[in-house]
Image (cartoon, rainbow, N blue to C red; front, side, top):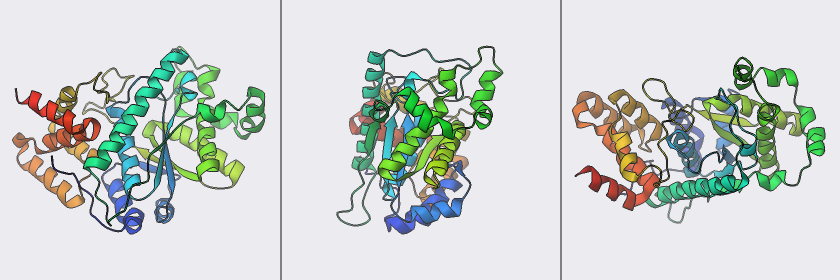
Length: 351
């Protein structure tokens, strides 16, 4: 298999502060920055930063809907930054109301533990495959900062409810919390919203504050539906530390119809090979419609701009060759399932 060294070998700092950020915005891998201070973010990314993304273990595997956030984490890692994945085993017991019309069922602790193990395996596998097949250092001996995986129960176990509300809860204003889109949607639904779900934004905000204190983590990656939660964390850091935290939002991964790919939508393409086989994963990308394939190529491929333009131009000129679909299927199966998974998928597809 060819090694997918798809980003130009150049100085990490110069590349991260200017070209990479602009390319990620241009390709819409980054949907927006909050607060919208792009030039300030470019300046900050010129030096080593800590960037995190959270994943609640509400299932035993991540899926394609989560993959774009992971791809952005990999871009940041390639630029020389430290990346942290937070597995929200505590917040999973509360439930994020974002994008949901009904409350999640409470998960048993043994189920959460099983799910945590599944998410850890997904993340470690993708990062290991990226390092093995997609990364070539700009200088001999240059290495990627290792992915750090933490669980937010590590810091909540030391808190009592009264102490947490007395110190952290007093920094939140009910009026602003009520205006969150996720809260308003649920208030206007027949089910309403529980206090547990309403308070979710407080806990996600505290996750960020803890990481800021522990690792000077000033950046959070999240989906476009996480703006309200990211805003809460931004406010908490501003109020308690007189500093600015920045959210980097990726678009939701949707079909041509606008429907999300995800667990809640019922059409998840899982990263765990026991839930979606490498063959099924490969075929998902191979069967994309042309417009979806062009959009996904911009979002998911690590190709430099020249190569990406060539892929898209070939796709538009001769769509019957399915150039973008084939490249997506090969690269993303290699990223998620490694060489053996890609070999199995291609062999099964040839039958």
